[in-house]
Amino acid sequence: MDEELDIHCVIESDSDDGSKSSSDSSDEERLANLEHNTLTWLRYCRMAGNLVRQYIESSRVRIRRFPNVRNGHVFMISALEEDPNIAFCEFRMYPPMFVHFTHMLRDDYDLQSRPDVDIYEQVGMFLFILAHDKGYRQVRTVFDHSLQTIHHYFGVVLRAVVKLGAKIIKPKTNYNESPPDHRPSSTRHLYFQDCIGAIDGTHVKAVLSASERLHFIGRKGYPSQNVLAACDFNMCFTFVLPGTTGNVHDSRILARAIHSTDINFPQPANGKYYLVDSGFAHRPGYMAPYKGPDIRYHFQEFPPARNGGRRQFRNPQERFNFNHSSLRNVIERAFGVLKNMWNILDRMPNYSFRKQTAVMLVTMAIHNFLRRAGQVDRAFETVEEVVDAAEIDLPDEKEEIAATNFAPHVRNIEWDQFRDDIAHKQTQQASSSGVAVNEDDVVLKVLGERRGHRRAVGLVLRGTSRSHSFTTTLRDQTSTSQSTQATNTLKSKIETFIHQMNEFITLLTSNLQSVMSGIQLPTPPPPPPLSHMHEEELDSSNDEDYLSDL
Image (cartoon, rainbow, N blue to C red; front, side, top):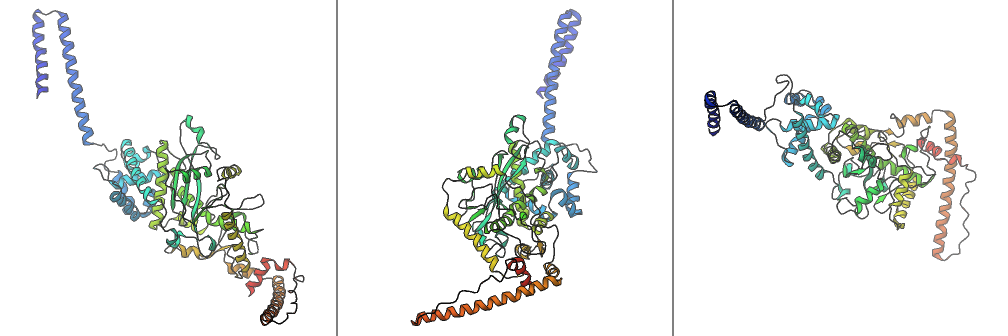
């Protein structure tokens, strides 16, 4: 009311001044009064404009470009209710899992609906950006929200999922008492039952300013952040440390995580250990493979024999490295699923570096949520059925040298002896087992047993692009008469040798009984010689042919 009176007074004074100036005021006075009145009027117009602007912002009025055809609410309804494949393609979740994930963020992590954007649209925009690496302008075309609204709610959901990651990215308290999915298979990895997971690093592209880019360029040749992670044998991440520059070696990041009081690293309990590759140091709690110019490491370097025979290992160290690599490969497969599911990790937008590290954290949190909730995904099925489907990133010579530099100066002899014992036990087990199915070449139905509710995969050959039937392989081996004749010859010679050994054991037993009774012992004859059996006839592949005929 006061403002209206003031305006009225101004206008009235203008008319009064005009009437007076017409009679007895000079032209200069008229111009001064007119200037004063104009400035006063503009001042009140500015005040009115500010009031209108405040009203519009407080009421959050939005103008839709497609008010009756397309908006975020209609898009979410079509994705969640009409076709489940649309939801999985756009959000990497089927509708029941999407609803469960959204309600969990609402109930446990304070995600709330707003009058303009409900929680389903908020989570939908967030997952849409992560899955397809879409910019805010592309998201605006689909959801019909302003750029400011999309940016705001992306940050809101990001903070909520970061809280979820702090709760879900960690190992269980009693690790080896977990379900079978979280333990090494007792069938294939009998001597790795105390292993609690695998540790490795992966590089994710980083978008930085020109002044910071140089410090983030590592062996990949492009700016990246080196993310150190640990995972269990169900491909669930149990630890993640993002944000390290790409030129820092994995061994140095691990040393920082272990010794820093600010990082809550899950230290292995007494007697437990992680599996690490040759880029890390071999020390208590962290089992590394054997290194050497003549020692092969990765299981892809041990192709199966063409005739279906066993893989050829030159020494116990290589057999240990093969089993070590096939078990540690679980973290490579977890990284492969993660990057295949969330395209934002391959083409990171121009976020602040702090937000880029948060994006890496939330993708791992959602990865764990989907895995533990039991969602059936083609990416998970692929790496479960074909164990070498993931891309392998082995350390180079510089990283192996760096691992030695950052290792403790005091070498633990007991830990080296523990690794040697595992290697020799594996060799003894392989030499004493007379089974026809080769455990080094064929993944039996263990994968199907470990998945439980998932589909059993049967027999899968490593190092090949397709599965084969082992019975078909044995039938092909014995199809020719030449191989059958060689097998029969070897069979008769082995039976003769076993008979002579039984006689020798019988004589030795009687001599021991004579010692107990005080009778003088005759000199026992030497064991039967093996000179009449050639080395090629005792080869493991021929031995397997004979055992297959049995």
